[in-house]
Image 1 (cartoon, rainbow, N blue to C red):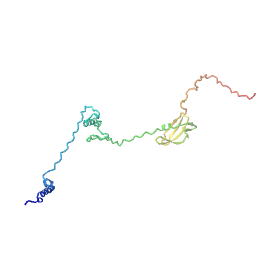
Image 2 (image 1 turned 60 degrees about the horizontal axis):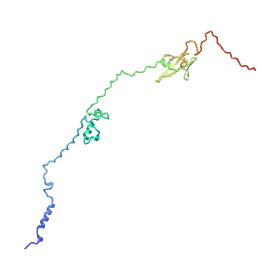
Image 3 (image 1 turned 45 degrees about the vertical axis):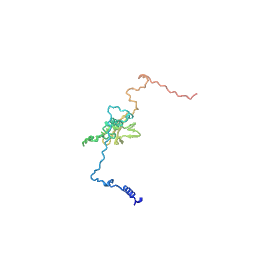
Image 4 (image 1 turned 180 degrees about the horizontal axis):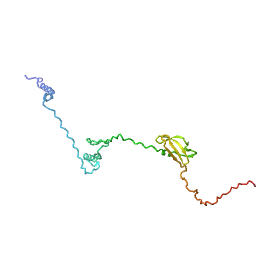
Length: 232
């Protein structure tokens, strides 16, 4: 008896193979490997980039457009020639060497307790009286600015420092005025010279410029004044 073509087992074998091909294989899964004795492999450290060496110090630096592929050495040589490398401090005044220790400032010696400020000596009373302005003298009185002072008058004088000195008029003459310090009793005189500037006291006979003296016995010539007559 011949088997029926539809009952052949070949189609069932092919279908089974296709189903098995779609299932994951235990040998290819990560769970199928024993990794307990394996250590993770660290990546190799990256090699530092080689620092370009600067050009020789004697080399003449040309403009940067001629550097070509040697930009690194060109820049390094350029930085070595900067003036900041020869300076001890940076633009902010700080020392560039981190290990440098600045010297401590010198301490000023403490002044001794005996050192004191020297006071200016007081103005002599004679200098105070010599500074008084006298405009006119008349019968035991003198005029200073717009005020008149008489003998025995007491008035204050203010110095530039603000100090007040009280003085009394003791005597007034054409040549001098005497004053007394009321507080200390010291006396001083104000010498007078009321002539205008440029004039001095004469010591000889009076003479006018351009006039020839006629002698001591020469008569004095005059011209009598004749009144005008009203008669015709």
